[in-house]
Image (cartoon, rainbow, N blue to C red; front, side, top):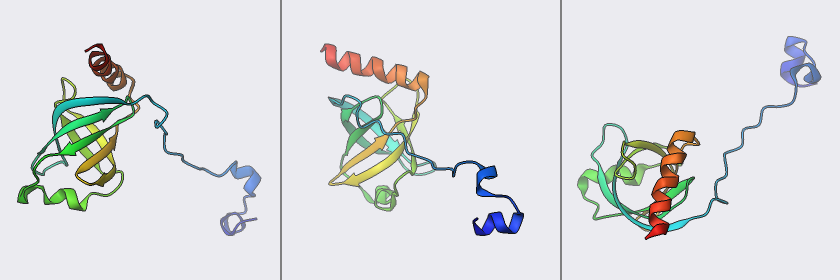
Length: 129
């Protein structure tokens, strides 16, 4: 019996299994070399130019170009911060920070079916050329 179950008089068995959330792991998605100019920014901050150098349906590696004083937000990024990404798909999209090291920002994409379909199209064009 846990502290909460003793307070509320509910046994652990009645509560069901503990809630455990696992991050979706798309590292098994095939990655492709790329050279796609993009801009990226958190909401309300100035955009920064970069180039997608590696992409899969689950995420991308973006090399950030010359960082200026307006891009100081890059040094305050935390894992899972949401960013806006423009230039990869027809419409701007959201992505989330994985890491930022050596001027390379690694992000993951939402598991949204429509976005993944568009990303597959981008990857098909890359592999066809």
